[in-house]
Image (cartoon, rainbow, N blue to C red; front, side, top):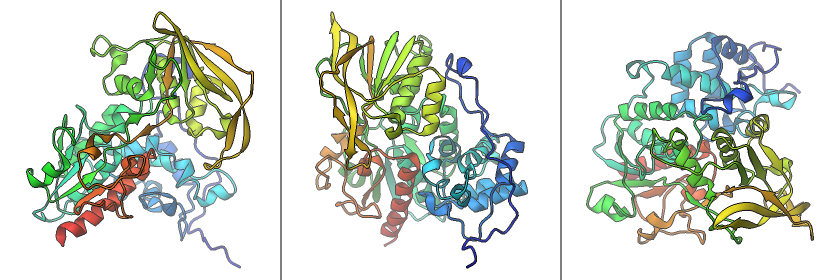
Length: 472
């Protein structure tokens, strides 16, 4: 039986092209980007590994169905501007997504080459094209064309990944779009949650500039639910439809004694102070932050890695990553785990905090108990079980809690008739429609914490449904 995927070209037999990175000892002294990106030679070499499959399986692995074969093919041809145009048909933020999306679990996992070896480095190639576009001045960048004005106005609540994707798609379809952001700078989790050394703020700002060039208006310091209610957006401000992409930014805590001590942070506050409010440049930026000597970060996801690596760059002598499962069960990207180890983060696996201890109101340590892994739980990972009599104290002066987030109720409590789950997330149909006609939602406010690209996919689906509603 012939192979169901027939190569159109003879692929390179070269190994996967490594991404150049800065030396760990050097990079822990500043907040400059760790990964340096491909130059043209490296990008062409990696693109040459692509089979250009007749039936590319990688596209189905992408939550926004980017034409991966198409943009990689353009790199092979040396037509980088053409590659950018292919990317931006489905993704308004390629330079950002190329840096932070977990391609290894999505498009790269579906690559044919992954069946027998290393997949094409799709994320690295996406970043290469995104950076190629941003290297041009705005006049010469790829700004998607917008459709004929529909005469309709749409409000987008939140300027994170889902909101920006929705806004860009609505503008492309010809609608007037205003984005409302509660903080003083747009970008949502891309600017407050992800450190400069993983995603420089200038990248996010530049990609938002392209949306503004499409006609998208951005209003900051506007808290929908307080500054305006959802009803006021339509009844008083005259918007014909609304998309809610407010994210899920309310931090979770451990619920153990000592969480009210000085020196205890949620990862949200710690990262927001450093990322968006630039506390690492104090006193140039007047946002002070407690800089501990010994810091324990509780959690095993990407946010925990970001917090631990940020603490190291702020001058901590020791940083401990405390996680109740083994490293194999950690949800963080393997790349981030690798970088954290390179930078001297100490992993304390199979231990769970039971108390934060202190003196004179300040943290002096974290009491944890040993764990062992039992049968898999509902997440598919082996469930941690306490080992009796195994308590020990981790000497530290700062504890950062990175256990995830939940929906912030400011907006939803002020929205009469908006159906919510028992955990406070918005209930939607598959296309993002909520229980209120003309109001749509997507991203973390619907699903809980997920990836940037999945949130963008939800925003784009909702935009297409909103287009149908607006034209009805």
